[in-house]
Image 1: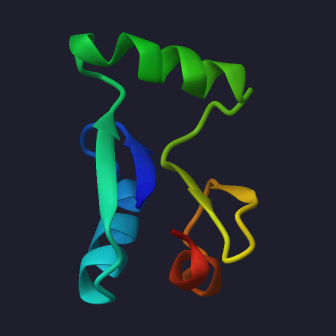
Image 2: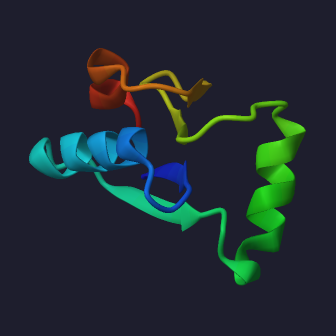
Length: 79
């Protein structure tokens, strides 16, 4: 299952979530604006990325992949 780090009212976040739903890709959404997601925000900041969404998962070889935009081909092979 992939993790999608999102912020409210994010068009790009919505596009990735829609793509995942349409293609039956399991994901966990982590809303970075929610107070209870403090550890997730710390992880997000540790990546040095300042945009949303951020998608974290593994490829079919078990290697971690981090995406910052909709990449349909990569999303289809991520777990």
